Image 1 (cartoon, rainbow, N blue to C red):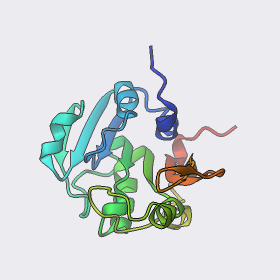
Image 2 (image 1 turned 90 degrees about the vertical axis):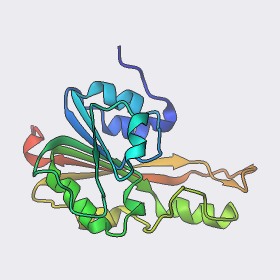
Image 3 (image 1 turned 90 degrees about the horizontal axis):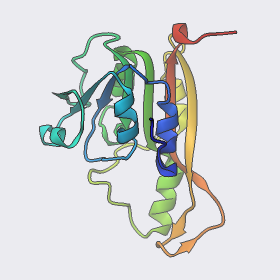
Length: 196
């Protein structure tokens, strides 16, 4: 029986709904122990966790761990993994364009990438009183156009989704609106898409 993910993680989990029996690279696993890993990893046939910090490796239930610096060209071969997942990584990198190009190169069927939406980050900075503590600083801010402009549209079908959040002012007052909290980019290899 497949457990349904909690509402807070359904954005990535729904994007990864077709990873059953696939080989997955989760690149830059970092500190995030998001619950979707408990829902996505068990669906996959083989999971490789990659991060620059080898101390992170024992925290995740992956089949293999690789020490990888996402700021440089990745050591994996073309189309080596069926699915590449990168969650909240690209905003920390010095060279996000190289990283985005590389994950498109090493994926054979699908890429899922998430990053905070710039609107959410700006709202947090203005109304929370300070930049939220993310462990390591966000070097980049993104909008969907950035990803669309850098996608190899000859190879990939581009799709974007957003998760929403109800913002608060200084953690106490909830506003009666929802804002985009996270961008989820989903790339599917065009030759793998069945057209009717």
